[in-house]
Length: 115
Length: 110
Image (tube, rainbow over the protein chains, first blue to last red):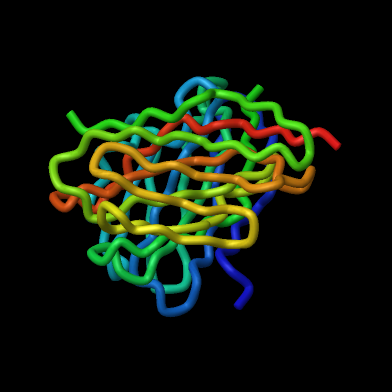
């Protein structure tokens, strides 16, 4: 298994531009999570999908952030317009079953820099 | 309020010098406690899940233990390749979300 695949690995963009981050979860995992990690705040959950349905997006910072999961093998996180304070590492993680305490498998992350 | 506190923030050891990392937690009903390892520039890598007090799990030089209030990650005779940030997270019974600690940065000097 190739694990959770994220793209791009690095993204540098100018303030105001649209940014789209992509994630392919592990086949058979029905839970998908988007996290953001910064030195100041650590790991923050942005949104959680179960069986492709958004269950909790209360962690999404504001309306500039949106996420979709059109099918079981693909998810996107979009920021429009981007701002310098969005600079962080964004991780996607998947899990086989949210209810049974299985560990999450994380992707390698996308390092976003907004200048 | 559910929370997780890890200590110390950073730990420097000589190669072969055993020690322990601490994860203290308060949660209204524990579904599971997780340990992860994170290397620079990579995502957290799952190590262990512990479900109930008294449970222990081992993997190579690492051993995780759990009580009703805390978990320890014991590292025996560490090697430089064990250097990483170790993250602890708890999952309450009432919620699917993981509550994360800030991590312990472990540096093993040759």
